Length: 163
Image (cartoon, one colour):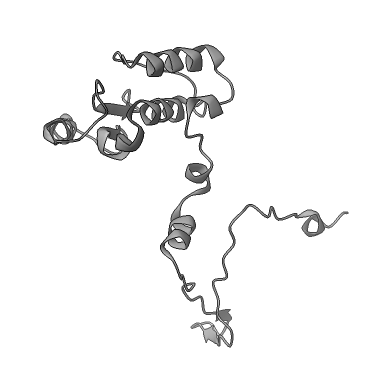
């Protein structure tokens, strides 16, 4: 039988961090087993902190519509909306993992540019339960003053709205 451990290859693009420091003493447990103690890594800059806390999925998620592979018809329609600057109410459906949320976030980023963070409210229906929660968040977002590019409006994304 072949040893599977010898086939493991680490990708150099993946951020690795050392979670132990030199001269760590093992920690005893109640059943006399020893477990090395784990310490927080020392972080020297804000950018390193951001990289450590950013999940892989978010770090490598496409940022613009042209980076999305697949769903050419839907993506070309969203690119048309971005170019025209006129965004209608949209319902996007499809199987899990096909790029619905990523596509709409790319569209919002292209339409709002630097104002993306201030001009987009993303709500996940599986987390934000109850119509009162939704109404309160949307109402406060709608009333908040935001500087958007000329002719652009705030964007509200209701992810998993069918749940």
